[in-house]
Image 1 (cartoon, rainbow, N blue to C red):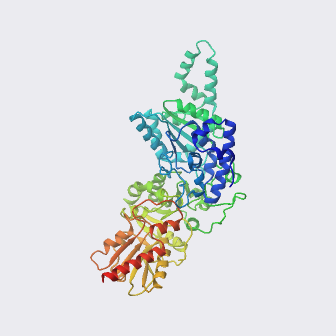
Image 2 (image 1 turned 90 degrees about the vertical axis):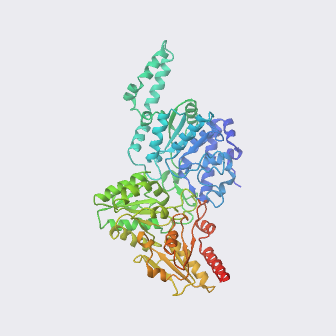
Image 3 (image 1 turned 90 degrees about the horizontal axis):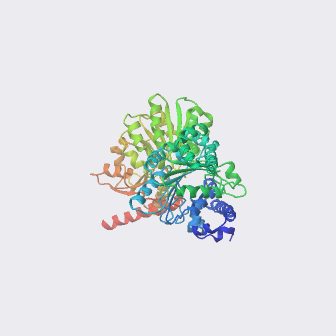
Length: 625
């Protein structure tokens, strides 16, 4: 078993407080080696965790995470925290089924104050905890660690504005690595860039106070200077946005200077007011490939440490197919624009951005803004395609209703990572979009099962559909079913005129349905598989001729939660008929992390489980008969 030097002797955070800085720097090197070794085997978020090592060590040294509340925004960068708070030995199970989560998770440890996974929420949660502390007359510190990328999210400003004005003692640590997943955009990025290169104010203030402390009457002069500090700052450094919000601003400080970070954290800890500490770090620090390509090493699959290459080279996937298809359409139509929210690479739009930079818009972590902006673009004659992960589209629910659907505006939503995503767990599975989009009048959902259907449906959505159209597709590649059936609202893939049961499904789940049908046919059970391509108000009413073809029993198979699932619409439409309906979906729960195959099995929506359910159903019917 590989040894990691001083890290092997660290079993609790209290151990850090006894170590000299020379040993702590050695510990930081061991932590980086440990993280690289383990993430190369399990996959996970690499560059963000390498960049925050010294800051995370300093936080655990200066604060007591068993009592104090340290909230890592998003949670991509919580690995050091987990290693130092008793989960080192479990790291081989990171993001594996039944193992450690890749994000903060209170079920694992009392040192994890809350669940995380989405960006820009940490300051809001921290302020709530600070208010609770004050109202209950308790004594603990509250720290929110938020990246500069997360500051592109509007929720962060709502929270900063409220927190600064509250006067509530709390610390916001701005982990500034000049990147989110892709390069930062917007005015805040420029503001932070100015602060990074203008640390003169803090140095000048300290020098003036130091000099005056040795002069008779210096305290009076210092107080006088403090009263007119806004005038001094206007000469040396313009007042920061954070100070205007009510925060005491400290920094910038080198986030890899462990002693300096500990000292400034200690100073912030003693201040009885809202404090924003600006810490500058380098994403991917300590691993050459991650430093050179921090975006590529943000989230990684298992890789070779020596070369940085993935152990299993990625093949074609739905995201890349979407990006190529949209670029091809854009080459023929200058009205087509692509909009995303800090996910240009993840949504497959890197190539589009390079070819058509004037028609590509990355708005940062601001999904609400992205959707409303698309509404404005469409109203004025453009054809915007808004590419978001399903789990993040949830944030723009109001804008889909208010800014797009009420007027029936033609915005196309490319919903990536729809369905079960896997290793990132409950916060990232895209299992709610069918339910919440179905609730909105006028929204059409298209459900491609393979790359050819995605290409065809994208063209349909842009040119042949009216009003808002969503195209939902999964993470990863296509399955065995590769036929393009997109010209029909529903297609019969296997069939008999008098089936024992009909499986109705859509999207990538068609592969599980076909596997179940094959297994059942081998056992003498005749199965008809129907693939739904469009979910809309019209198709939820179900054509009469289609209903008559179903036979006596229908199983509706979905990678969505039970509440609001498409099967509910079928169940309602078939009321009053003799057809029995069985809904086979994810149930009403939040899924754990693990591989997609493992989660399918756990929920009973894989081909084998579906076949078994139908067998049991048929057996019960036979006994009842």
